[in-house]
Length: 220
Image (cartoon, rainbow, N blue to C red; front, side):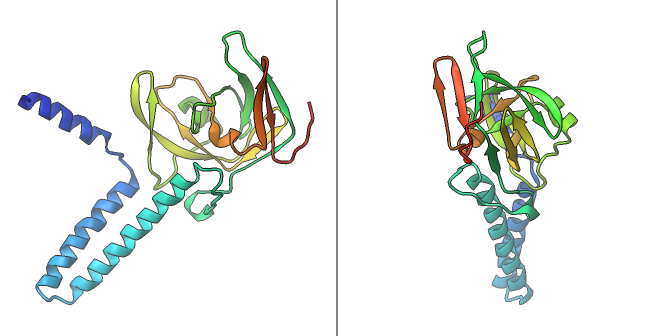
């Protein structure tokens, strides 16, 4: 393998490292831990304090990451408002969506009072909004959160997590829903499985998708 190829691969790996507050805190805690260990070897008492603090910080970072990732599983309903992780709720009445001419299911939704078209994508893990809609709806990247890597037609991209205060479409109302602000997706917005899996059921009958929230209401 030539040096230029090794350099290109190394550069790509470095660029792929999430640039987040959590990463910086983790690196700082690791450096502090190494420093504290070095002081302990020299029998400097203050080294134990530094080493212990480093361990506590790394444990807190790990807990934060686990909390954020666990929210992708609807069976684990964790809410920590202090970390910008509100309770995710999807409720309301039955909603029917007709198949569009392009072969996809589209719906009109409102996010924090801003209307936009959304593609219902059962292959998408997370709900995604375009940067334009995020700006109009006042969505901010989650502070201290971990960026999510998305696979797109143009390759893998990093997207910031956010929380949607209010999402409504048809007879369905949701709040506290996790979403990604997805650059490189143009103006496309997506309803993902983190919303659909919180319904009581969803199914496709012919050319109609039927969404039934947990309340079990059956309003057409």
